[in-house]
Picture (cartoon, rainbow, N blue to C red):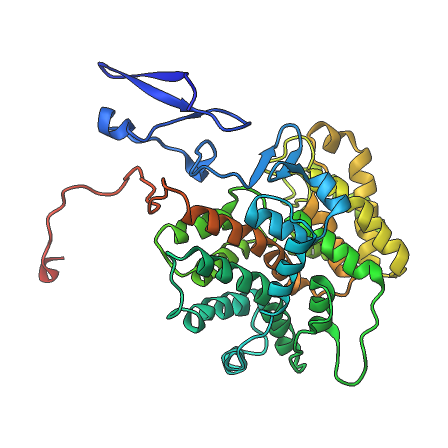
Length: 428
């Protein structure tokens, strides 16, 4: 807590509200006693100006384009680290030494299998069910498999639950995809690294081995790092809100997946491909740019700008280079990818977008990379969920150790009818 305070005049009362400071970032006015002292709540739709917790995991400065995991700039982690090491960092607060990383990777690797009963559960879905619907249901069902022996008061059992989630989400995600296209489910190959293992579960068929260019795993690993956490976004806040009730961690993460599914959140990269399909041809990019500038047209460019980053998305700067590397190395001949590159080039040169700082964001580039790697559009948000699981379990673990943790209970401004008397059915 800082020595500063905030003075509020509420009617004939003067209230001193303490100001809290973190290690960096804006100060926060502590309004915990506001209702008790004034009889009033605060109103903040979307919680745009409200801090819901203290967290030491991720720091964002949207104006300066800064993203840090546990104090490490995302640019350094993207260049030097990999997803499993970043997951360890998010969960434990420090980078691992060689022994710690080896042990962590061993644990994750040896918890990748699904219980065989999952097959029966999976076969209950329609073949054309959206993979995010299946993933939400499958993760929720994990609570039934690991409920009786889970003691949330035991730190080691909490840690093991987090490891299981990190390990099993890719297995379940790949199984959902293969079921949706009628392919047999592939078991995880534990001699492979995290991302390679997932790609084999996704694409390998029994009749022949899978041959992947190294750039595929490299690009996907980078995307997983960039998507691993993003502070108190809608899905992470959902995980924390459900977690505040003492719910099973698998149910908490299932709720996070459901929140991520929305097109305004994790579904944004899927919306990018929908937009590219709507534009259709590279030669139609100019008219699409013109329509995007016309407020009356109803057409929006998806994957441009960001709610948090008011200057540029630091993740987009990193992934842009990888995006072009993937397209060059794979030599993919896809008209939609040509549309995307024309659109990027046009927007980066257009004063309308430059003045409004509507730069391509991470969703724009990630959608293009997924497309180039032959990952179907309906799996885009699932890929996001695999990566974000690292952040979700880290926040859930942190929350369980927070002495200030309380069950989430937002307030409201009531706008309905007041003091009405019941009218008997015969008289209505």
